[in-house]
Image (cartoon, rainbow, N blue to C red; front, side, top):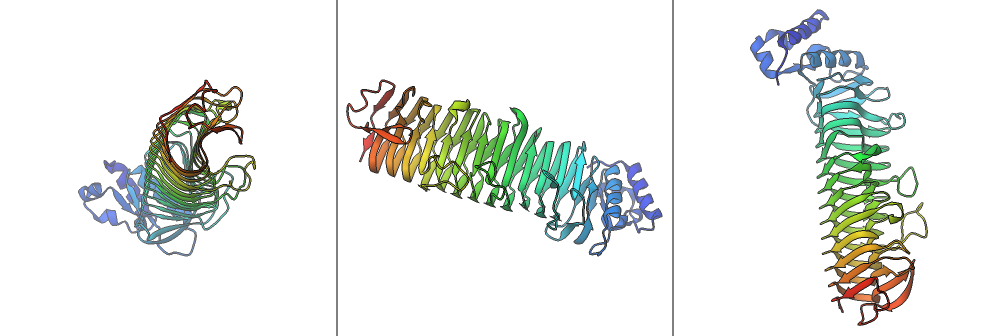
Length: 455
């Protein structure tokens, strides 16, 4: 990292005038420049001091930032709050050993309009102090090149990390929070990778926008466990990953376990990719594309335990256009969590409605249906091909209600089915015999059914 030598020497001289012993003053200029770090102790901070060190901490942050240097905190704990980070602020500690305990304020650290921020190797302890609505223990707005890495963000009284209009990276952190672990609004180019969420009151990772539009956040290789739904509702909360109004988001390779509602819930999120995630013990729909979206790719995921494995829905509100491919879905349950509409379906492997291909999936142990196509009149241009469905009440259901559109159901292997391999539905009511039998589907011109293997 390059460094402004004149500003660095000014910062060191200021600390010396305040009575602090400046380690850097005793170094040759060339050595100071090569390290690009300032020891926080040299600027007046004291590890393990019982008093609030907010004022000394703020001065140290400003001096290091002015010098374009990293403020290095030795192991120990420090009490501070309401710290403001200017551009180029960089704070680093020893992972697991350098702890900052919040002493007060709307956030422990915040910044508005500050680019090139770096926080790494710190334990950031919110001490359970309640924070204002939508506030985070770390709260950054309108910044680029923001990097939070290898930190433990714990005991936040609201959200762990809030990012508003931020471009940067959030990597390798461990977070628990009373509300959401990570909340991004109107991202400008964000990567959320390799983090661990262990316990969140209402949400794991939230990627939202104020209005529908391009977002492009990448959410990859995170581990998310124990997401609750303390706020109630019918699915607004309790999701491990929630993408809302944000287009072109990639959710890939995450391990998700024990979420009150969904593993990944896309709401009004076009061109959403949900790929290669491993999800278990979900309370509601595991992988969701709902409401006014166009375009979703849900592929190569594993779902073990949910009310519904995959749902591509709300054609009545513009939800359409998807590929559901190569997913392994099993062990569905026949009920949804409290707060949801009691008339909503459950026990279904995959449910789709419009302009969607469902191919190459394996569904096993579905109390209701392996695959469900359409709801009442909301069915259009669905192809269900080359899937394996085992142990279900119905193998495949398809809406034959008045106004329902076209579907192709072919070359599927359907085994150990209790009530019918392929059955026409009006709402929740089966109204046909088994359409997998030769000639049974002839009366439904909108359906093409053939080449399926039933045993």
